[in-house]
Image (cartoon, rainbow, N blue to C red; front, side, top):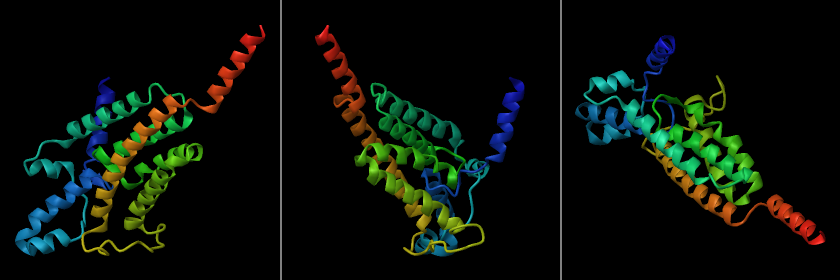
Length: 223
């Protein structure tokens, strides 16, 4: 047990970052804090239009007098994940379960500390499965796919050494910050879609379930 705790401490030291280029809540915090401290040099307009050039360390965040964000962020992730699992507990629909799994990935990415830009990729195949089975999920799938792709493109382009990244100053405010806001909104939308699809799956059982019940009913009538 002591070795596991020591390993966890080492991991946390290595992950001494609020957000590793991830389009989430903590990237916005990074942007806001850096802008605030740059106001004396750049003025209000210059500070808040300046691009976010560096990742902010959790230790630096605490040195500024703020509490350790990990417990709060972890609590939000656990509560949100528990809410999502509770919402699909009565469903046996594969699409709903894939949608719920993608929501947990999405919520973790948006709310957790120390997340990197590629950590939301798992949500894409899960949403692809859900969208293939339920067409009503496809708008969410396309939106999340675009966010994941754009998040990585903003910092790395279309591939290592290939360039072609979208200019982050295209809309004046750093595009990575605007993408973070959009991703938070997408996560809220994801939660609403999950509620809707879970309710629909319970009220309208899958074709396989209906066929099985019909077969049982015919068998009972024949006997």
